[in-house]
Image (tube, rainbow, N blue to C red; front, side):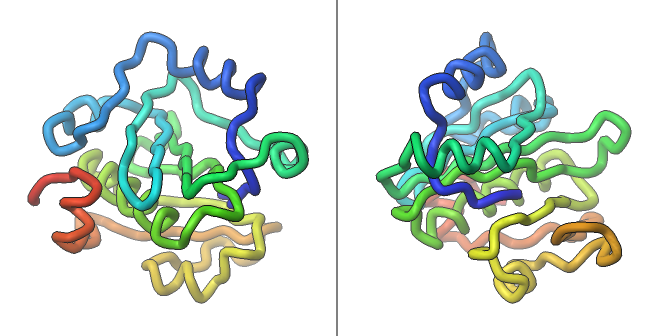
Length: 186
């Protein structure tokens, strides 16, 4: 997972369009739960702490450090927006991988938090056992991850790997956030 400094540029946006071609955009997760459950890959878009959409993808997004630098210098994100890319690995259908996070200096912590809550809801719908990620940005502290229910995972590996273990005990999303994100009642 990487808290990048900006949003998808024109060239990368066209690749997103190809990866999302033909898949309906979901804006009401409460009534479109079956579609969310069926998708293996997706992109969550949150603007100003409110869910804009969940886009389906044909393949997982693979970010790179070079992409982060490109976005930082050439494609500035100038609004309170966060995009989270996720997928279900083929060999581990009960796990969800948080692949990449696009955001910028104007992105609030509330918007980032809202995006992670939508990911938690998708994990609940898919009955996932855990969500895993690798963090490369120092702006996301270990303390924050621990506060949001993540634990250090594979400490002997290179990088900062985290896991959010669920195993049927999915986090309860507060009613106010469920309403704001249009997640419906559980």
